[in-house]
Length: 384
Ligand code: ADP
Image (cartoon, rainbow, N blue to C red):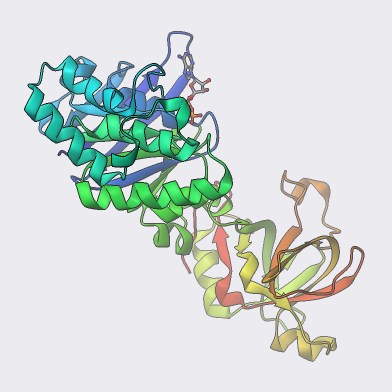
């Protein structure tokens, strides 16, 4: 088992594509680190660099205590599991599992013992004499994992290993991978574009965008304290609502946040903190869908002061049984130039139970200002 360390790694492909930019990341021994981000952000490239399938353009890659930049793939003691399994179709499960060991010239007894052990770990014992086509998708995936792990690699690399499975199986195999990692204590780097997979599986999660690492943290930290607006808008299902807002004063001269045509009163202390850090008055505010709720019917200035709320119009409703997702639009009379590019002021609220809402309904959404996040013009999280 081993630690993997990337120090200021760059990868520029021969066609000029800068897939990875100044990536510094340390994966601890026995850690399961998930690398997540949208398609094309450079996740697979990082994995391929660690595997030795691509050469780094700059920086230092260490596996264990060795600099691995120039090591050929077979000398790195890493195993890679691809999304398409790549099992040998004419070989039984047993032969598939034995294959990497035969390549190493292992003796019969040792080979048998290693295959039995991994088959036991992965519940493959009853399937050892079957051919891949006689297995379900989940079973095939387990054999592919087994074939990677039977060599007892120092590091396992998994590239979207669940993407060929249906939704139910994905959840099951995801849990199995987590358990397997716990049992084997293999250092694992797991790539996915699915933030739910990342949050449920990773000890730590590294979020990437456009070739750059955005934040590396525990799932909880990513959710509670996103480092920037990209992470805030990527993590969570649905993710955080982000909207252009202006700092100002409310009708009583108190501290306020103006969103579209509406004003939310926030504490003077909070405003001062944000103002101190922000370079200008226009910033991005964020609130998670679960921190919006339907406000009481009472109206008027007093109610607004007690409970900050936004008037909105329902655009679309999703009833999920235990909760209702209400997609709403907040009326906006700000000049187009001040609105964010996303054509914002569209929010989603996660409301408990089955809410009888229809498209076109006028609603008031209450929010606790303590749950507001603020990001500066460059998207960096502001304190407070
Ligand atoms: P992800 O795994 O996050 O989808 P990739 O690492 O596959 O992203 O790709 C990152 C970027 O590098 C993309 O812009 C992609 O088009 C480019 N890229 C990937 N592989 C190659 C390659 N072999 N040659 C040139 N460009 C590549």
